[in-house]
Length: 164
Image (cartoon, rainbow, N blue to C red):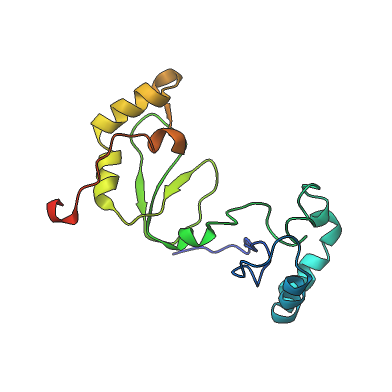
């Protein structure tokens, strides 16, 4: 039996609900009005916390994005979470790359590659590439810090689908 809590994450990208309008840069009063019009319950809930939300990162909140939007959080790639993807934690002592098809959101320091490629998953979990990662990103106690800067340099040759 699944137990659900009453905790929710409000993912509100910059310039929501006009977040796909590439012509918007900086705070958009039009986006705020659209948000208030189409999502009044959420808008009014956040409005009660506007003072607190406006005090976040003063160099950006109210300048680059609206007071109600998330700070930098996946602003340019949030739609990638809806894809099948390979995910992993930043620090591990064994290969622990996993395949996610549940459209889950992950948080830092977890990492993802937004490709539906189980062949790549197998390579990433192989002892050969783990050995390479240990050389490139090894830490004390046999752990590796599998940051994207190390994983993207793994010597992986892209094979055509014909050979898979």
